[in-house]
Image 1 (tube, one colour):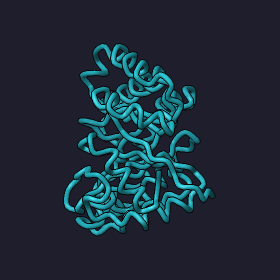
Image 2 (image 1 turned 90 degrees about the vertical axis):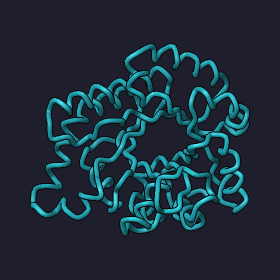
Image 3 (image 1 turned 120 degrees about the vertical axis):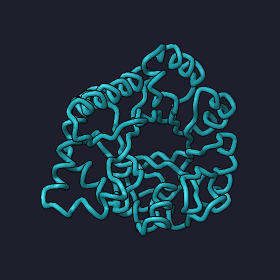
Amino acid sequence: MTTKLPVLGAALSIKSLPAHRDWLLERQRDLEIQDFFRADLLDSDWRGTAREIKAMLDGHTGRLGIHGPFWGFKIDSHDPMIRRAVTKRLLQGLEVAEFLGATQMVIHSPYTTWDANNIDMLPDNREALIERVRATLTDVIASAEQANCEIVIENIEDKNPQDRVGLAKALGSSKVRISLDTGHANYAHHSTGAPPVDYYVDAAGDMLTHVHLQDTDGYADRHWAPGEGNIRWVAVFRALAKLNSNPRLILELRNHDQVRAGAAHLASLGLAE
């Protein structure tokens, strides 16, 4: 366990990177690239975009990750044909990650608000969901292990913070870990009766290696800068301080111009640098 304050990073795109380059390099902050979840880019000259990003990051030695593809699919599809398409998309994401030298890729949790009330209605539902995810991710996990790239599963609608943890553990790879989106958890807390955000940290424990920091009002997925919503940041960072896994703390804001303001707010509370 460390006593020094964690250093914040950010989720940025090729368009917003130049404005924050000096801020990233001054502390060698962790960075998540958010261009390569787009299907149109993955199916076109993604290497050209990736080369531009690599040039922008000359001198950056912080930890690098990407947000993997997620639009238009879930990783637990019942349809084998759809699962093959999802596998292909995620393998494309890993190819990008390896090209960039990224060591983490974010993917989305399969658990829905519906699941919270219905998954245990039939005795085999929970295990069947895990097996569908396993069928989708087997080749992806093998590639991630070969590329030394961690796959982190981010909460979206998850009401029970233990669901993702159980899924990640069941997949049986050191390269499958947990991501927490604070705003998604806060939405689930206020709108669907889930526990507060710090409970999600505690539930994941040292399986948690990635955090999207964003604030909300608990009603919608705002992606506001910390301080604009109602998340209890002191409680969140108190929970994070218990961990030994050193998660990447990534400001993921809708308005990338607000990254430094969000970081300054958390710094003003004495929570991070």
